[in-house]
Image 1 (cartoon, rainbow, N blue to C red):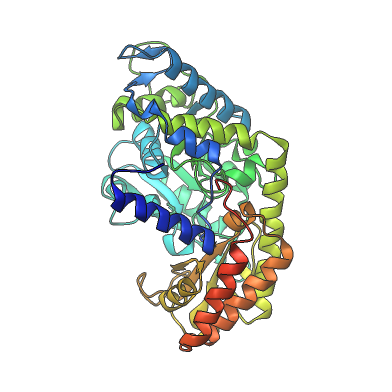
Image 2: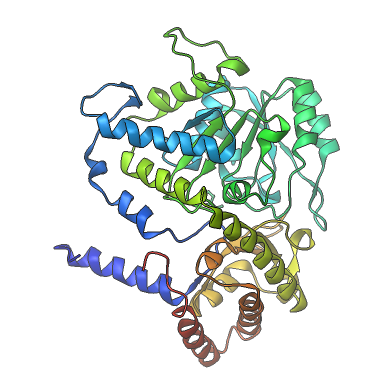
Length: 426
Ligand code: DSN
């Protein structure tokens, strides 16, 4: 399509080219299908539809209601949930909506320390939630294995009686023992909340555990990471929404109703129905049998990438990975900070992100670590043997980060390689 706005058109073309010529290793990114892109770019963006299917404030909803209901039904099916709210604009508002549905200002949330893997919205001091609520932190017990300190978690839960215990992380490469957390949470009467943004696609692909199987009450997620949908958010619960107009009491039975009201009208106005349609399309794709093959390949690739990196001297936090991501302490391994490694690899077409490591002595702008993962490169069709090659490129580039000619040669090699693996939307 030719746009009259040449500047934006050209920048979109440059970005498409950048994506084609490089390999995306940021573990929270992915490449969507053409169908997902087309739903996002549709006339659905023209429509206002405050409310929920069958209960809207504006007319003209006969198609919108069906679209949103399909998204809801497919999300429920994927996650074995009783209720889904598909309206949150992204992961941060999804988490905030749960907090505001269940908590009063000043209430306590027990969540993972941010340097040990917790997300920004799990209480980073700079966020609105951290100003409103009282966040208490648990950590890993042992960063060489990644085992969470469930004993500390239990002690903190008894001491502070949190209203929410939150699991699910942004830079944690191991599985969570949901049963242990659920039994602690049930003893202290906390809402059990799992932020599954990073591993949602692994759960629905059957290669990671589903927190609902262990009695969790609420799952939040983004839809654009391993789930491979549009940029957006999602909240899933057990139980059904009440049709009563009365203000619901803060009980577990009422959690679906409390959350729906916290999203709209509590936090958001008109839902983005073009994005909701794209969510529905990506949920349809995730329900197909080949999504299970994709999810398993993400893990298989991550296993090979982790061991290939270790063979080349990368010190991996927790010793490796059980999911799609790895966090490497490059300061310890190569005496380079994460930002230098990120820039070096960017220059050869491998994109990953600098990342703090547990209890990092350095700053978040110049941290000790990097974070990388396999969801996007697996979508491109890369398999185990290409993981070894990526680790080799990373190692050569990092060890020769001052050799600009060598980096240029690597960039050419990686461009030629990447072009053999088209984007799914090409
Ligand atoms: N920015 C996302 C990530 O990279 O994990 C989380 O919001």
